[in-house]
Image 1 (cartoon, rainbow, N blue to C red):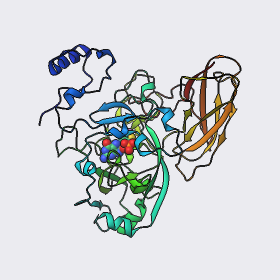
Image 2: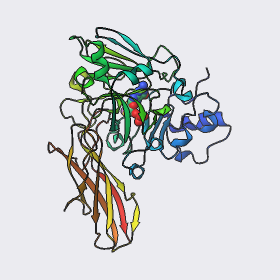
Image 3: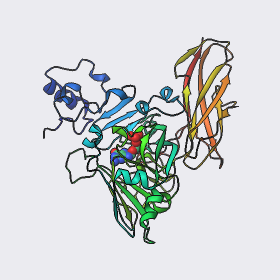
Image 4: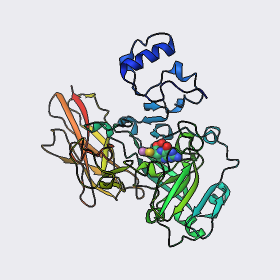
Length: 415
Ligand SMILES: Nc1nc2c(c(=O)[nH]1)N[C@H]1C(S)=C(S)[C@@H](COP(=O)(O)O)O[C@H]1N2
Ligand SMILES: [Mo]
């Protein structure tokens, strides 16, 4: 198997340049503009399976193409429900062949471990054996906003768009687990997917995470096969995906093949070390934090997005401007969203719609009247039922750059 010379991108610029020239036979004219993780197409085309950016996702901003990681520009998240072609993608490995070809033959979901009876479910058994649930669920990557931290954390430099809210159909994981009998020794569940490790070594697993048994048995935790009325798209986990709403997106296993009920906290790839962990106590930016001082991320924090107008918009003076977006929280409902256009001196409340169901994001809207021509920033701040709100600048620094729920700011010009 031929490997990309850019396997370990980003390379230092000079080295990168010389390798590119060797590989392409010509220097790249706009080299300064090339995203650091992007593999030049001319080279990518020589390596099978490397061009993983589907045409229908072309409106997303690509962060890396191997594995595929792409985020949604904030103004394209304006829909009440995020359409499949606009939902961000965060992959750790290669999309499995089954998902690309949408073939179900031979697919089963094994549920084993601390259950009285191990079972291998077919799709028919899952779809016909348990009551169907439909819910609008927000999925946000814990690394969303990572680009805002200084010192920078390594990993994809997500800005705002590693979040989406879509309508899913499936069954409760709790119904499935209970039908098999959950043993009192059950502590955690772990998911395994059919995706391939980046190295394509079949003995390696790109990611295998999970949640405590209490979260697994929560009635909102679902095994899903449909996203916005369609079979789950290839990038999002065809044929089946786990959703643990309100928790980091990384707990929502895609391309499921196995749920393992464990008698201890799961220790699969991306469960240990500093992965999806934050310091138990606040630390100074840049500090090295001992593993024993880190804890696993549970609920995602309160957050909001401004989805209209688009940042950079020019707006004729004199007309009220509609400002709108969404707000969500991993812990429960949002109680209010406020906006400011004078750098936080005064705040204006917005109209907030109720969530269609728990863990759906909530629409907020308001009208603002800018007093004279010139540059403004509009900021939005959500507050949840428990009174938790968003910081104006980045919250507590952490080594991997997780959970940045700073207020979203957009620039507008009144002309
Ligand atoms: N099998 C598998 N499941 C996975 C991943 C993965 O790489 N492989 N990525 C996780 C991460 S880190 C996130 S944030 C979400 C992203 O879901 P999306 O690509 O549907 O937006 O899926 C999670 N589930
Ligand atoms: Mo993630």
